[in-house]
Image (cartoon, rainbow, N blue to C red; front, top):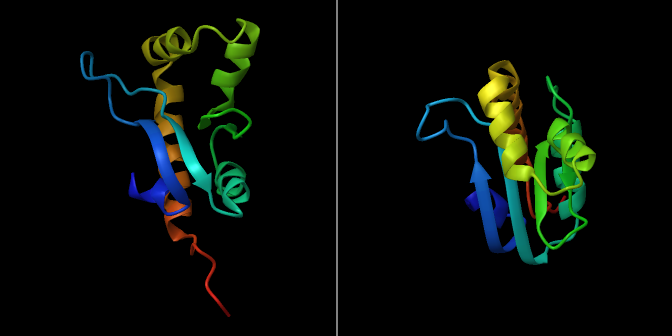
Length: 126
């Protein structure tokens, strides 16, 4: 994904932002990735992306592990309640049972992507 590559050399990424290919339901969007060597300011930029634009939902950016991710905070909360072992199950349950949440999450996700695309990087010299 070109957007992520603007902020560092990508080693890996996964993006879910399309409808479920089997059922056609909107899914909970998330973005997971790893940089070989992130550029300076990168964590600040992604933290701003999940907090600064006007959002319908609360979002989490987590750069604490090998793979970084952005997902709705509800997913993180439910993962913690279940012992961090049921990510795919939680995502499927939300997709199947809470379409309004998925639509709101996709709306927010588009806003975050637009926000990130508008950030000049590397910082322009003034």
